[in-house]
Length: 187
Length: 338
Image (cartoon, rainbow over all chains, first blue to last red):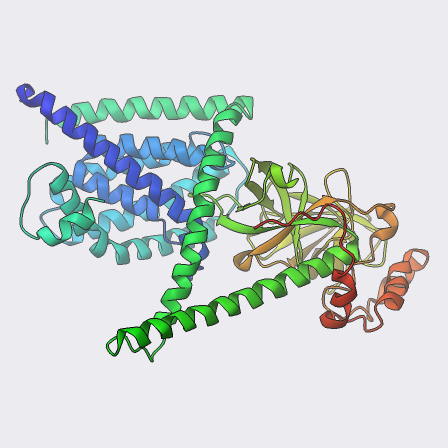
């Protein structure tokens, strides 16, 4: 299996760059647009949702590394301790990546994995913030916001997951049917 | 994918070690990565500014398109004209709203004799949603600097916590790390207002335990090195601790974090002693000034209530008549920003 390592590695590098770019765009969209929507109950965490989708499609390595890189970027762009959301994001990417094999078997797996990732990620942010800095939220608020983030994530998954799966197929040169979606997904 | 398990375990362990190292370094040394942070802030700030500029017209166009009567399936020319007119209407509404906000901001700045730089909020919080900060589109080039007070037409918003050339990050008053010197209306009694209770509540601690804080008392900033004096903070909603050495109360801030749009950064404090200027802008917030029963204790220090009345005859915020003279003589240092 190592004989194809060369092509597999360039493929992985391309996937990884695409994942990080997508997440970095989501980072800006999150603070400039999503945070201003004023969704009831909490907020959609676009970055966590996308990270979970990417990990589910590409596996734990791409998930954890791209989560880490984007987490460091997010930390640099914020005022809290450096490395804190990188920690949460690489754990989320790894954990979701572990169930990638089960993702094809049932619709419930991606839904629950991505929703669970949003809940766990939001709780993880709240927990790390209260450990490393001043607690920005009380426990109850954090749980409420995490649940809201999970609900929004589940609502968004049916749209994002097929789109990114198609994009990933196109990136890896394994075209299947549904070519109409590919162009949009590959962006 | 079984072959990946060992590799992915190695990767995650390595990443965790790096993450903890970063956290430890940053936590121990404080601002270790300020250079990198500055770069990321200015780059992302520019992008965010661009995104906001682009998405606002899109949102307006979308709202004009979702209007029930659209004629897209009729003559194209008519449809375009229609959409154009609607966009223009929406633009006008937006401009009207913005100019009203600017006028209100100008009014409060004039009452406090502050020199302000107006700015728009271009990003809210950070990705994790745990930072109580907003990013605004004014920076060092506009005169904004770290620790400047930020207000809007309703009152205190926060302080600038970091600034790049064209953007700045504002730490909101409700941030857990925020602590603002506050003064009770009509008295010289000092206290501190701290965040950490979520976006719509602040905690006020009065240092003088002999004074009874009451529900409905209003607070303004006391003014210090960082803070200009006299900016309205909020109104006491609940007295939580009546015993002990100090009094604590819950305060509802005048500023609603969810609807922050146009803010002003105070770049010049009042020329005269802030201690005397404190009460000047105080009648700006809601009217019920009459019944503050314990106001007698502050008898020598109540010129504000009296002094403010002659300057604006209709002391409740009758914005139109007061705004006209207020906006006329412009103050030095009010740089216009986009």
